[in-house]
Amino acid sequence: MRAVWTGTLSFGLVNIPVKLFSASEERGGLTFELLHQKDLSPVRSIRVCAEEDHEVPFGEVVRGYQYRRGKYVVLEEEDFRRVRAVQTRSLSVVGFCDAEEIGPAYYEKPYFLEPERGAERLYALLREALRRSGKAALATFVLRGKEHLAAVMPEGRALMAYQLRFHSELRGTDDLRFPPERAADGEEMEATLQFIGILSDPFRPQDYRDRYTEELRGVLMDKVRGQVPAVQAEELEMTRMKDVLLRLRQSLEQVARRSPKSHARRKGSAARRMQSTIPHEEGARKPKLKRKEQEEHSE
Image (tube, rainbow, N blue to C red; front, side, top):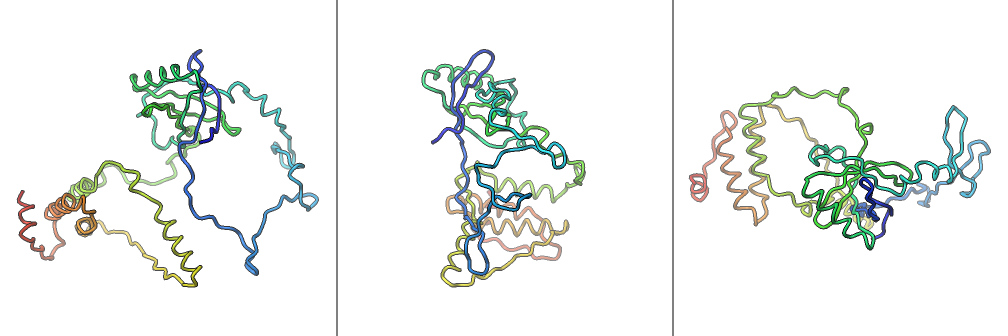
């Protein structure tokens, strides 16, 4: 694993040399190329001077900022190094807070922090202090030319640095419409809470995968073999409020059928018990339970 940043984790006047490693990676999805439709040749992008209308070699390209329409100022590498030179090599703790106070919308990207040789005891000191206090350390650092905010927290034997979004990067909800609180209640609420309970399990991230990419890869392979895949678009209509109980009952029937073997008995039994508590659509006949289901229901 290659470090993306090397510097110092500092709190107060205590400095801990560390390396920063990305704790996530881009999914191995499908890569598409732009092609010329006529002969399917790859299309390449080139740098063209807007004034002279010809290609510009990379060595003649500089970075500039437009401070007024048509007016630019050029920044050299030395100019970037002048800006808070110390901060670019430091993950500086500026305060502490309870981790629960950081809303989910602020989390952006996770990193591992590894101590340099000789800094293990200092590293462990901060890690255990954060663990015992239950606090997260809020720190700032510069990566790829931008300053970031991070929450440093213990995770097992490691310290994690979670890159956070600044408050100014989050949008407000003033322009959006939401229903008022307590806008839903009654039998529908009770049935929905039961449905949530039936499908609740400990979070196992390994159980989830990118099924869209898998199916798209299958479509591509069909086309490579000269087959034309059938596409069946499913139109989803809004459920009417009066149909919620019926739809939940139908959903539970699917849960009972699709539950894995290891969960089938518990999920299926619980789903059937919940089905018996959800009122049927008016005029519909209540289905008879088999003997085994009757025994489960009477438990």
